[in-house]
Length: 329
Image (cartoon, rainbow, N blue to C red; front, side, top):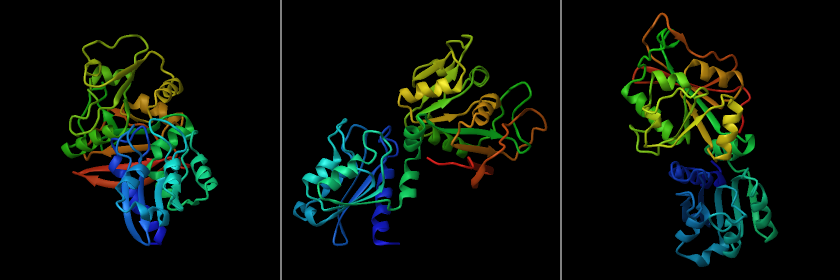
């Protein structure tokens, strides 16, 4: 592993510490190095709080060494005033002579401006070290800003013979205790979770993170004919709920984008999931397959074109993760 890669990998490790607190801001890690020795580290802990570069500079005890050091950061330092002041200005003020950036920031108010500001101030800036890994760290953030919609995860559980429910729609429990915990972890990691009208009525899920210590997602469903009763679990307190009277996916996604919801997990039935697949509105599919056989029932969604990126077994159930053939973020 190269010298730069070594410290950028550490930036990525630090960034992941902000997995639940940083959003809707990206996860970012920063490391300050002087003659091969790490002087300071930091990551973006909480949205609205200090950025990774700020925390890394604050952690340095020997500030007089900053003007001889290199700052490694997984995402381009910001150049605009938001909830905090520009990190590029702080780097310039501390006379750090060299900055190594993993990837540029796709956010319109940054997107190369941070690099330009630092270079204009005479700082040597290197861009693109472990770029693929740094972008993958924040694929939800990149997709949101580049495609102007949430990053979309489709998730369902099915029988060994490919059914997701009984013929009359009665749900069947395919998940184990362990895979249920993992599903709740996914809910905590994504900012919204969506089901269809039929799932809301028949399954009556609460769509919360009861089995994982993370934030509840925004609950989303469609009710074009105002038939969902008030006693449904998704209408109870505990998490925000958005109910759309319009069933057009692009309209719903456009509204979620305007509300700064960067990721959406879809847990609906075959009809809703298939509509996302048919319109090409998905970034990852997660299929949990139980060894149970139903022999008849509601058939799971069909996927014509996708690539397998991971297959694992958890508690006896198979987990398969798919991505679009041309996936990029």
